[in-house]
Length: 351
Ligand SMILES: C[S@@+](CC[C@H](N)C(=O)[O-])C[C@H]1O[C@@H](n2cnc3c(N)ncnc32)[C@H](O)[C@@H]1O
Image 1 (cartoon, helix red, strand yellow):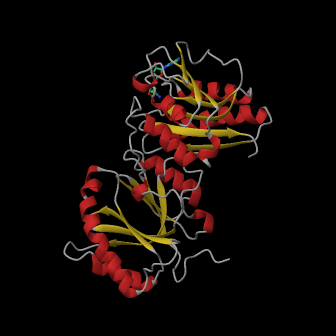
Image 2: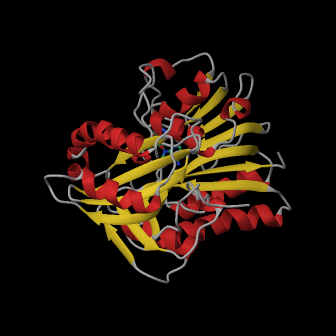
Image 3: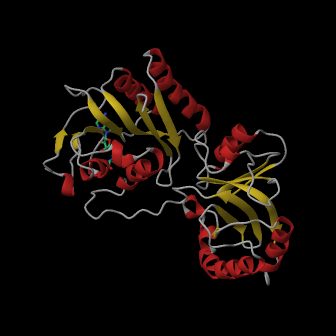
């Protein structure tokens, strides 16, 4: 089966978007995936690695990538004159004659990048008009998308990628802050549910029970309660706002490393700020003992050797689950709402 979009040539490489300050980790993710041969480069909020070939599974964000928000196969990279950015792009695309149904103009998640957002909005209809006139952009079912990633005002990576559910412009999920949630960190768990959990509406249902370790003031608890779960909220600190005294919430003022429920629960979430390897061991105990089947938790990142620390923590968990003979699915990601931490999701079981 052909793995390329109709009438396109092989890409020159892959551009990956990340949180500024995490370019080294983002590039390491790319290299782990596509090899270290060829050229690589990083700029604020992105990393680029040349690669010889691509396959169908390369489209989108492979599960093994932790620090990559979005990854796009690149057809080419152009320097653009200030007065006319469109003509060189159209000329370049003529050599490739790609077929696509959507155009995204993207930019890095930096202050300089954000300054490009109004340019992007204005530029978009011009690109679309030109691509339509050439017959590249059509109205058919949404299958392929042209990505123009402006690393700077005068520099663009031109990419083409298969459209996938859950794609976000610039790799940034735009989530609305629920007014009743007592803290902004509620968005982190919401993003985790949307991006890491398969079929979240099936896996988070009314009547289930969850535990939230390090729950106060209640932003994560809110996400569980909102989906109908009963929640044990473990924290010496106070629950606030709508989560203070909520009938679905049992607030327990205890140490999250010691407290255990009397019966197994469906979900464990954990946002305690602690040494990552301590959190990893705790999660491993809960899962390996069958106390919880699904979990979302944060691992705080060190200043240096972040990849190595993440690998060490995940190994603690996978070793414990393997020793217990359990099957599981594990995903780890540096979410948009994460700063100096990553978020992990693990589901134990076959389905
Ligand atoms: C980042 S805050 C959690 C924010 C919460 N997820 C939310 O959305 O509102 C971390 C919480 O972990 C709690 N914490 C830290 N160590 C703990 C421990 N050993 N046991 C229980 N809670 C702990 C702190 O009291 C603090 O409230």
